Image 1 (tube, one colour):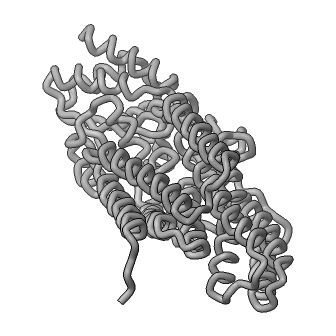
Image 2 (cartoon, helix red, strand yellow):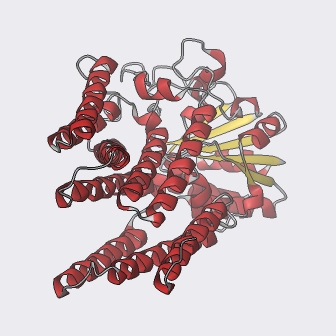
Length: 467
C-alpha cells in the first residue's frame, strides 16, 4: 500500500477538483441557458489547476529563486491582462478568428513544454515518454501553424478560396511520413535531432494542410484544430506527469472531435472530404447580377411582415458583421405586438463557428425558446408566410437539394424556399463562402433587400410602426 504525505494528498485532490470543474463547466456549455455559468465554472477550474501546479512545484523545490517567481508572476499578469483585454474588446464577429488564435497558442504552448523536456533532460527517454513527447511536438506544431492560417483566412489576410499546393495531398502525405520517420528515429536512437526535424516538418504540414481548404470549411477546421490542441496538451501532460494537463487536454480533444463530427454531419460531408477536397465553387463577376431579381424596399418588407401570421428569421454572418442583433429583436417585438408569431431558424454551421448565431441573439436577450434548430424549423417553413433572411447564403441555397453538380449538393439546408414569401437582406448578390450562386435569389417568391443588415432592419421597423 502506497502512503501519501499530506502535501501529496492536497495536490492530488486539487488536480481532481480542477478536473471535476472542467467536466461540470463543459457540461454547462451544452445549452445556451447554462453556457455562461459553465464557462465561469471551467474558468475557476483553470484557476485551481494553476494554483495547484505552482504549489506542486514549490513542494518539490522547483521554484527556488526570485527570478523564477518573477517569471511566473509576470506570465500570469501579462497573460491575464491580454486575455481580459481580448474578452472585452474583440467583436463577436471576430470571435471565430480569436478561437483559431487560441487554438494556435494552445498547440504552441504544448509543443514548447515538450521542447523544454528535451532540452532540460540529458538522460535518454523511455519509449513511453519519447512517444508522448514526439506527439506533443508534432500535434502542437501542426495546430500552431494551421490555426494561424485559418485565422488569416477568416480575417481576410489571405484569400478564403482553396490554395492549391504543388503535389496536392501527396505532398502532405510525404511530409507527414517524413515527420513520423524522424520521430521514430529520435525515439529509437535517443538522438534529439530527430525531434527537431519532426517539429520543423510539422510546422510546415500545418500550413500546407490548411491552405488548400476553402473558407466555407473553416468552422470545421477550427473545431478539428481545437481537438488537436487538446490532444497536444494531454500528451504534454503525460510527458511531464501533470494530471491537470492530461484531464483538461483529454476533455478538449474529445469535445472538439465530437463537435467536428457533428458539423461534418450537418454539412453531409466526411472529414477526409473537408480536409482534402479543396471544397468551393467559383462565380465570375460577369455571372453575378445578370438574372432579374425582385427588389424590395423597407415599405415592401414592412407590409409583408406586418400582415403575416407566422414569420421565421434566418440569421447569417451578415447579421453578425452589421451587429444587427438588437435591430432584429426590436423588429420582432414590433411584429409580435401586431399579433405576428416570430421564431428564429439556426443552421448548425451558420456564421463562422458553431453557436455563433445563438450567442449573438442571446446577447440581444432574445428568448432561447424562440430559437429553432434545423430539424425543428424545416417542417415549419411550408406553413410560414414570410421568412426574413439576414445575411445567410449557403445554408439556404436550394442547389443543395436540386443540383447534383453543385459542390454543396446533399448538405442539409434550411428549406426557406417552401415559405410563401422570402425576404433576403444582403448588401449584394455576391456568393457566400462556398463560392457559388444561389438560385433562391431569382425565384418568384423572393424579394431582395439590398442594404446593410442593421440599416435595413431599422428602416423596416420604422415602416412597420407607421402602418
